[in-house]
Structures are given as structure tokens and as C-alpha cells.
Length: 495
Image (cartoon, one colour):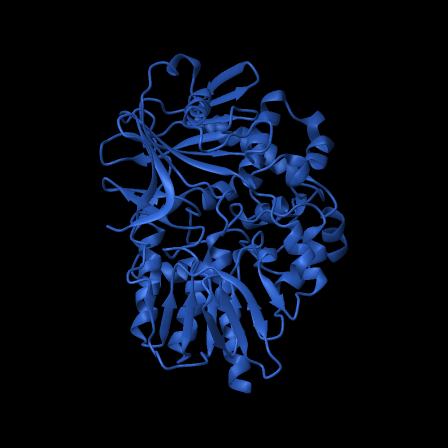
């Protein structure tokens, strides 16, 4: 199996090594379906879910499509490494049949029976450990769900009716615009302070963990409106979000689905691609042709371009004509989500169904079982806040990662467990992502979201970062890629 330059793994015997084996690596890195073609119908920049969906939909409609990707692999911020027969999802992971756009792709490509459930019950350490300051308590998972659900419901019940009327449909826009604008001024910290007197110390700690895992930053930088949207996506139910969004993933990994989408697109004979090709500028000429220039000096031309460049990277690309101020300002404000995601394998199966939370932590605020490795070790997934925050850590410090993971365990277990492997990718220092999934700060959604979704001449923009519905999730990326590809097809058909 080929090895991508992205990610790293650590084991006690081999130490830290950069790069991970993955079926997402593309070889050969360049393929020209029509080598003499001077102007493509469409260029798609980026091969994450949005880019692969758009390229596929264009190619099956007969459009000569060029896929330009900066990395050596497809998948963008969702891809999996395969180590000793076990899959490690490095970015976006969990999908569900309640996520309509991605489930369509799963069923289309024959993966509808390929589900793995996170946190299976029955292991020796079958409980949740909550650490709040010096207090450490083990509780049942039922109690964990009860506390989380109560605090989350209270946090989101900002209108007294759990948003059932003011935000009925999570995929729709324009509902209760005055309330949306009002709530968009508020941070998650502002809202927590409004209800703090109604919560116990334990409930407050759980809610802070829940929110930090959601937005990957301190609560004062996280906008309330994104949290409320996640509540509506969970069907206005206390544990609805977790039951959908942290429940199931593909057993064969996201990269397996990417591979099937990519090979389907190739089979049309209408896809050309070039990997290891970072883009530096996009220019539309007066004759309506768009030129995409790469750092290596290559220039590609098309009748339209679909950019799936993430929000936090968009401002690093030179556009001519320049982007409108409202779109550029949105890119400069960006997503605040700078979380770390870390895989930790503990020796033996004992922690298969364990979970841990700590509202301050030593670099991680949550850690939970997500199956067993082929070696029968407990595979845990952990999340930590922005490394620049007081409770954040740098991923180049293996000792800090180990300390952060052990700090979430029950005190009596910390000296007796053996960490067999650590796997991660530093998304914050990845120049092609500059962060993880999208979570917007206060005031950005109502000011900038609509502008981010609009085309700029013949340059169109598709990304889960500004989709409706499951924004920041895999489903949102697929939705956006599908919608924008349709816009381009309709435009070219009309002209």
C-alpha cells in the first residue's frame, strides 16, 4: 500500500515516524484523458468529498473535467490510514443514514452494510470517567447520557420551545431571520453564563467538554448559532445529536468510498487529474475563460472553475478580479475550529466501551473507545482544543499527548495501562486546511454565509465549510459539491 506524506504514528519500539499507509494515495499522480485539450469544461480544485462529488457529477454529464489537488492523495479533511489491518480515520469520520447526501453515496457504491458502531458495550471498563478540577468520578454510560442530554437541552432551549417552531428545518435557511441575527451575536460562553446557575458543577463540566469537542476552541470564540444548528440536526432531542453524529462510521474507511467515487469518475473517460499540484492563483479573463495557476508554474484553463479550497485557506489564493470584500472578510475571519484529533491504542481490550471527559484537561478534553485493533487492543479516539489555548498541546510532543490521554483515565488506572500506538495528523499546521471542520465565530453566519455560497464570475465555491444543514460535516461537503456541480451544468447548458 502506498504511503501519504500526511500524518504520523508513534510506537514504543519504533518511536515517531511521519507519513501513513493509505489507499487514498493516487498513482500515477497525473492523468490526462484528453492531452491535446487546451480548455476544459470545468476545473475542480480539491479532491475532498465536495471535489470528488462535483467532479463525478460533471464527468457523468459528459463534461471534460480536470481535478487539481495539492496533496498526494484524495479525501481532503476526511481520509483513513490503514496500519496492520486496522483503519484510523484521520479527519471527518462519523456518518449516518440520517445524513441524506452522504448516505446516498454510501448506498450507491455498495457500502450500505459496511457500518461500524462506536463505543460497543461490555468491556471490563464499561463506564465514563469525568474529571473536573481535582474531582474524578466514574459513572455509568446511562448517567453520562442523562447529564449530557440535560445540560445540552437546557443550553439550546433559548426560545422556551427547544427551537421546534423557530428553527423547524435544519436544512432550510431564512427561518426566523430576526432571531437568527440576534442569536448570531452571542458566543457559547455568553449562553453558558446565562444558564450556569441552573447547572451543577458536574453538569457544567460535561457541557463545557461537549461544546469544546464541537467547536475546537474556547467557548468565547465559538458562535452560539452553530451550536443551535447542531441541536436542530439532532431532531430537537437531548441525545439526538450524539445518536446520529457519533454513532456509526464505515468499516472499510472513508478512503474506500473516495476510491469508488474516484474510479467511477475515471471510468467515464472525461476525468483528467493532477495531484501534488498546489494552486496559487485563479484569474478570469474578459473572454470568460478561467486560468488556474499552480505553484510549479503550470497553468490550466477552463470555461468554469469549482473551488473547494477550505475557508481558512481561501485568503491565501490570489483571485483576479479580486474577491468581493464580504467574501474575503469571511475568509479572513475563518473557522475557529483548531481542534486536535488523536488516536490512542491501549494494550488489551479492557477499554473498548470506556469514555472520559475533562473540561480543562492537559491537551485532550475527551477520549472514547472506538473498537478494537487487529491486535485486540482498545482503540480510543480523543479530541483536544486549539493548541494555542491554555489547555492545548502541540502534536509534535509525544510525551504531552501521552500525558493528556492518561489524565482522562481513572486515577487508579493511569499507571497500569500501556499505550501501544498513537496516530494523528496536525491539521492546524497543514497549509491546505489550517484547521479542522468548520465552526463559525459569533456574527459571521448572518453577515457572510450567503456571500460564501455565491459564485464569483465563472468561479464557483463548494465546501462543507459553507453548506446548509450539516455544515462542517461530510454530509455538508457532499451536498455542496452536488449543488454547485448542478449550477455549473445548468449554466453551461443555457449558454
